[in-house]
Length: 308
Image 1: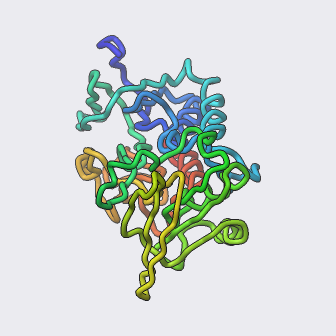
Image 2: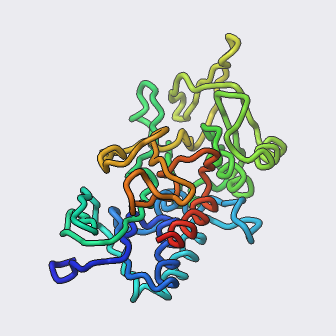
């Protein structure tokens, strides 16, 4: 972007994940003058970390891979990209109010807009790492998966109890030699139907937590301990997948000047933040009953654009 691009928008959408892309499509359909800015070099948000992970709770699909879902949302947006441009590698830095509009400062320039829609998923994230001694000596530990062919006919161990861990377990079942999922609690944060399906087809150990990792005879072993009784197990693996969630990097939500609750933007039922004419959707927001699901973010995009 250059200075000549500094125009007054009806809305600037911050973030090009699923919610942001869909919001851009809806903005064009509602004839709003809009643009999307994204700090990374690609669209798709956190789903770019899990392109080959199956998503089981998207309406209209019994199963769709995350990469295919992103592509579908982007292809839909492309029909309106001439009306709502997407600026990659453009990081939002600050927002200030000027009379009846906002000035959004990015690392490229300044943009003027009547409203802002935060769809940044709570900012930039990186996977939470496994904290064990000598962990850096192992090159067969993964925090996201882009290609599944390297796992073919291999023994896979997965750590985690959320949708990412369970969904990857189900996704890999037909490709790998074995799947062992280890979760430190008895209760899962994943969809119960998928948990039961994985338990029927894979080895699921609960409640266990990883306590050590080592190599013997050029093979990798993970030591786990039962969290309630003094029992340990040693599990051989070819590849270890760790899905402990994401942690924020650099950016803090409170830097934007909006009210924060439960580490998210507190919004009204109309998805408006504590600052008038700044809206927020997706994983960056909190309201009573909020569910952190892709489909929820897409519905919030429709609500917010409708309000704008």
